[in-house]
Image (cartoon, rainbow, N blue to C red):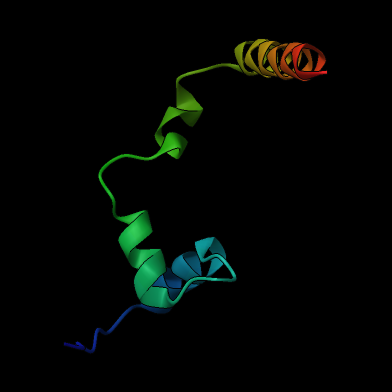
Amino acid sequence: MTHWVRLEDEVYDRIRAHKRDDESFSDAVDRLTDSRSLRDLRDVFDDDQVTQMRDVIAATERAGRQRDR
């Protein structure tokens, strides 16, 4: 079933800005209104913590590649 929804220009622009190239607007709204998202964590960690996590992830990936050789 299809429904028509009226959006303010600002809301439409925000959805369009977050819509992925391979998504319909319906898909984008569904994803953006999902109850949980990794984006919810953006205010939880500071820049230093994010850098440390990225370093650990990169080191783990390197170790896994070396182990696979």
